[in-house]
Image (cartoon, rainbow, N blue to C red):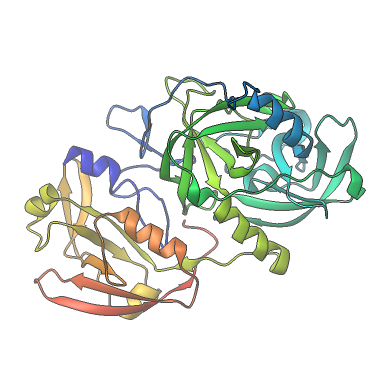
Length: 398
């Protein structure tokens, strides 16, 4: 029961949202407050020591990747009016004087498009970009930002011959243990390279607007404040993710071997929409809830031992209009407030639902207007098939 409340109800869904629920407090980096008053991630992974990436001929691939891709990595300075600072700052950028913050980014084409994190340029009235080892910075236009995935698209006006875009890989092909390289500007130290491995896959982190980002890559490559927006690169030199957040512990604000990168497959679709429309729309279902375990099912006398227990349904939201029912009775279990009596989602589009992650991933993979078929079990044991037409996710989960 204790583990359940730390992992499931600490992450609530509001169409893919990660928010505080049932007495637990979610903070910017996707962490929750534990009973002991310390902070911990919703999920954790095992870090490994950095490794040297060499090919069969003994060539140092880290050096080769750095020499080839370093020219396309950007040092970003975002100036904000007065002393204004970004509301979401889980990891960086590293603040400097005069309302200026620094971060990283990378070129994706020869038209001058640069990808970075949304939180790097949030609230900025002036953004400048320096490429590779150049000493000259360039004014950048913010084409658009997507706080739901923490991705932003910039554009700089630079002669084509001075642009060296990075190749984009396929994050769906990444496996745990793959060698990776990170290039960025930690603590303002430009053109810093570190290496490591993919420590875990399919993590979820909190986006700047309170919703969750799915399929995040966890790495032990050393990344720190200022690495935000920089590329996570595989052994072939292709970008597989955007370094976005870290987990720290023991009061440290620096790297402890657990970093998170937004998958490049997610960023690729976001960039496409930002180029086309200047904004991105995400699907929204409008519920909060948590994963059902056999222990919880027994404690609450549920009719099923797997699925997602719906806590609340957003009034007039997609799930509400489809007939999904939230809880109506308050209960306290292990010191956490739980609303019981709601539906349990057991299937989505014919696929079994075993955890909240299944619901979040399904919603994040869909688009507004898509119809999602749910199978739910009511509190009285009645099974019902419902069709939810997904809406447009609001700007914030708050």
